[in-house]
Image 1: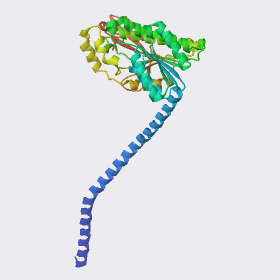
Image 2 (image 1 turned 120 degrees about the vertical axis):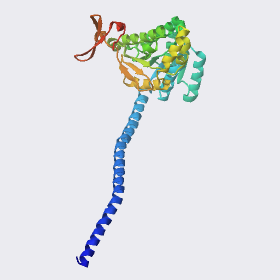
Image 3 (image 1 turned 90 degrees about the vertical axis):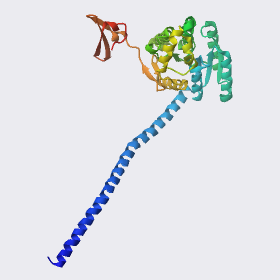
Length: 364
């Protein structure tokens, strides 16, 4: 081999070694850079839709607020039990969204007057009126409705909210939660009905979202809340709506942080029940009255007459329905219970339970 040929091959080999060394050193960094770049690019592509969804959600929220404001701006609202708890939260939310006028009916005169004076300083005079009234006293309630109608120039929405929890004084509990609720509903129909010269309106009966397993220590209270469902469903009959022009909606809040809830362990039939009751309550998520009041405003916008709405765990309201008894028929065969549940057109689920579970409404 000549010297020139040797030199040529040596240089070629050096270049190859050099290239190999460079590739060995650079390529890992290149691929690392490429992987990071692709990862960040994919990340941005994932984030971009979320950002656009946030913007659309914000715009939808603005539109929603605009619709709420437009809906309540010219309404005169009467709220029973409006001096505390959920009722007071309703008052504040309606005011924030620019309602025309509000009348608060409550048995607590001192608190009611203090609240009305505080609201007067923030929103001006003749915005909120307070009328002391006991919903269990029919004459007082009639006078209160008459006064509210004169003060506000008519009534458009009635929030039938007054209620107590006191199992030890269950006669009073029934008087407030059932008799008072029915009396308020009847007067709401009288003052808003088209048959009586009114222009229709909305009646909201406040019940409660209850789990029998967690409220076994509240038999009377639970019975009064179930009664409200029956009252609302009857008043929401389509024929009734055509005559009166009044939509009847049922609101069922879940566990909510109010004075009624906080003091409930001391209002049971027996002190022996207290430990189990508190233990059950600790397993249920609690929400603020603000969430329920804000949810009610959304329900009023699109809730149909006869609809039942649940607001629980601080989430958005959702609608439920009262099932037709025919769709929950049970039959017995060979000492076994068969539960037929219709879930759709032509579709039926059959659940089989043993004899020990016959007393259950739903067997699993």
